[in-house]
Image 1 (cartoon, rainbow, N blue to C red):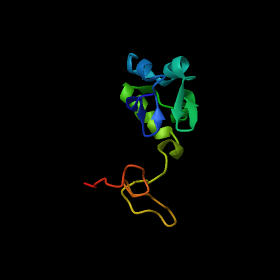
Image 2 (image 1 turned 90 degrees about the vertical axis):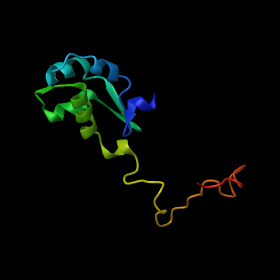
Image 3 (image 1 turned 60 degrees about the vertical axis):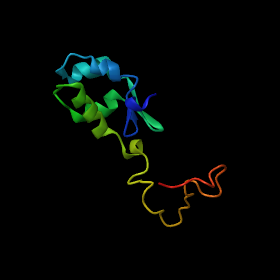
Length: 114
């Protein structure tokens, strides 16, 4: 799995190339008939394209970008990991963070911060 095939915690690598090479526009029914059983990995979970796209009840998709956006719209919050997480914010109450280059890290005691 490459970083290019994973976006917002969703891995389309197994089906991405097939979807990109389809002749668009394509009807949703035709898309799901051909690729509905393909799995999309979402962190620790997965779902089929049919499970993700069927509830949208779209007539057709005009491009790969539209299919990809529909998938991203339908994945659960678990796919994106910890909501509102940033390692640049102060630690949450009770959260312990080791500063990069801190004295407890082997070989890091002399590291400068830029």
